[in-house]
Image 1 (cartoon, rainbow, N blue to C red):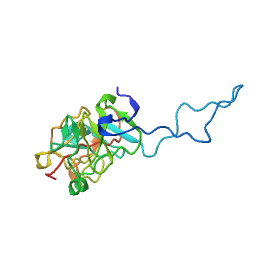
Image 2 (image 1 turned 135 degrees about the vertical axis):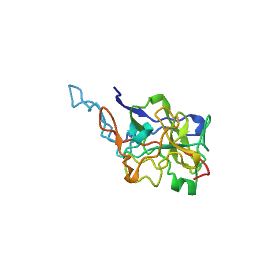
Image 3 (image 1 turned 135 degrees about the horizontal axis):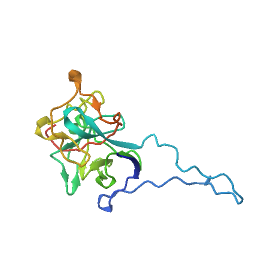
Image 4 (image 1 turned 45 degrees about the vertical axis):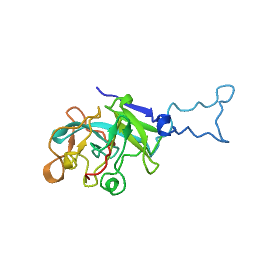
Length: 198
């Protein structure tokens, strides 16, 4: 059974990225001597926190979805070693990159070691799965859609291992709803990026 984990998104110095430190400040809490109030074990949820989930989508099997349940994709025009996104400008409008909007991510069914961050040409930070930048597809309208699957023979839904999903596109009125044999699918976001062919 997969467990949900929260990880801190860190990037290598090679990409000039830094993790976001927890905010301190003038109002830092110090425990009172004699059993003052203890700090809760977990901090309030970050509304910008990235959430990636391994979800069964149509005939694609397990793919990565974002916090809203949208399918994430990888692009053959990108590289995983070294990790790089080549989908910019108009391409990024059709294939919006899955951005690291927080310093932490919640993972469900995805190995922590597979998740990373790269610096994009525009200075934003993009999520990677096993080195492949991940994206959403602008024409996917609802959770479980995977209309970008196989487009231009370059765009593919990304598996929790960073591989290309095999199978026919899902979505629209064709009944491409996300499903899971054991539990309702948890939303996730992560998609690989690429250049050209969009």
